[in-house]
Length: 337
Image (cartoon, rainbow, N blue to C red):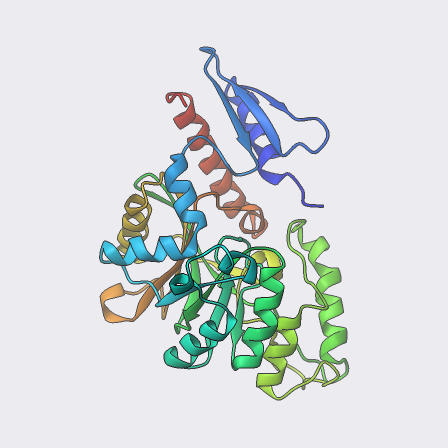
């Protein structure tokens, strides 16, 4: 079960600002804020009354998000939505697009491609598919949870998350995929088990490594390895193609080094969707260098960015997160629903 990081931090900060914070007692993910002037706001985890409802719903839909980003001149990878058998049965024949159509589109884009659920978060089921068989397998898993998936162009670059509040950059960090380091003694499977056990000691209660994750096997297949392989001393083996911190990835803070051009891009993307608070996910060569000199793409926007794993990086990062939540509470103190 996930730890209510945001709720507990809001309760701590709120009391220091004279704000009454009452959390739902059983799970503590939801709460009510009562300000000194009597103004009230409800919140749930990282969802606050900061972003408009319509903009938040658009941000949850990866296909819509990329459409509006491109419409306003921002780079986003080519993608297309495909539907479960259940949803296709309720669509006009001309609008139906299932797994076979998804494979045809992937072949036109050129493998590898990314396949992802259109409306889930935290990297759930996001998979780099290298062939048609991969799409068949992943689509089946996605359609057990939701009815729409995206097939998306695989863009090159390092994976960055930039957190924006209004016209201000709160934090920026590179997200690095789950990997293990060889020691010439232990197998990849054993190193993976060790990495899973180590997460709890790193103060990351909301990160989880799924040992049985099929995406690990896909990645190892492309590397020509198996779980039983014993990597050489110092050999780094990347196990996932997605870099979400919630799936065991790590990160490197670049908040003080982000280039002004990328700050402008992140703020512009946030405003394009009518958001105030947003996590902007950017693929590029280097976020600290001028955007005009490199290829970059916005791959997702998150209207309720989780910062628990980022806060675990160190004291400076934890203080940035606390500063963000203070600013959110200050904003809510002067705005009604």
